Length: 331
Ligand code: NDP
Ligand code: GDR
Image 1 (cartoon, protein in one colour):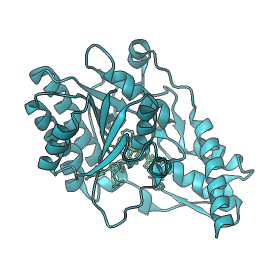
Image 2: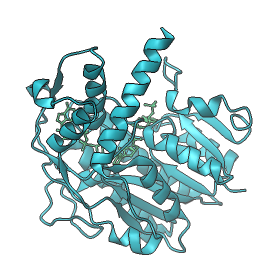
Image 3: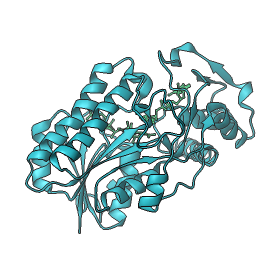
Image 4: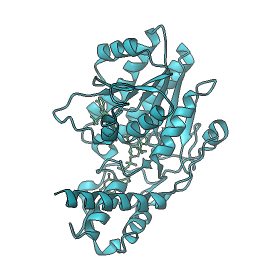
């Protein structure tokens, strides 16, 4: 059966992709970085599955600048597919830590491409790019041919990585793809991203655990889709005859207020009674409206997004209410 190696396996996308690949019979290896906290909650159900952990799912330590270690793991595991998902994923934080964002997201990707170039058996390679590469686009919706004009350190780092993937594909013949992903969410979304911050607050307020939600700018519109639907498309990209770049998006922009309204309504609350805005969460530059055209992925991969932003708001709030209730009953 085929073997896959993932960077970023502990993240939202890494956890869904791992489950999907294991279900298809893959052996999955994941790179994790050494931290003082060894809790990897998104992978917990897999760790507790005795037929899977250390049988078909294996973890290896490597930070994204551990080039020698990454090369060693690649040689040892001989993957057929390499999914590069790791990176500093918070756009707002990239203004505070631009150097490490560029080091890991930009240079980290180049270092992996350089390792692949020298390997005898080269795995098919997928890099997660981002709608942040478009920054303030001239055209809407954005597709694979829309010029990259990033306006955040995160977007600049992803642009560098995206263009390097294209360069290694064209100049060195690597089977290398960019999944140009618009925002995708799930109950496993990190708690500092706006969607999860909203659904967790709606759940907490509905259970009387807090009485306000504090956000930054509400001006932006985003094209929010479902994380497991997007990771399924990433796998399809590596099954094609030729490597290419694909936009993954729903094509439907929503405002942060739309998302707030749907999340709070699902627990019978009006967000206006609880919202406070704080400049601390506002960014030096804001990407105000992103909406993607995923027709290339739909035509070539036979993929289509089905979950809407408002479905996500309701599903994520319900999941947060359930998890808070579980926590309360276990204490
Ligand atoms: P998460 O923040 O949930 O996960 C990020 C992953 O990268 C974690 O496994 C994290 O490890 C790992 N990581 C971060 N820095 C390093 C490092 N220096 N060395 C090794 N591992 C590192 O992000 P998502 O799952 O949501 O996103 C996955 C990727 O997709 C990211 O690159 C993100 O930028 C990109 N992306 C995400 C989109 C989205 O809407 N979710 C849209 C477009 C692109 P740890 O658990 O130790 O922190
Ligand atoms: P984004 O997602 O920057 O699009 O990056 P995020 O959820 O962080 O922000 C979306 C919009 O909400 C506004 N906002 C807030 N954002 C956060 N995080 N916290 C707040 O309190 C808040 N208040 C308002 C933001 O300013 C922004 O306009 C995500 C990440 O997953 C990236 O890794 C990925 O590449 C892009 O999506 C596509």
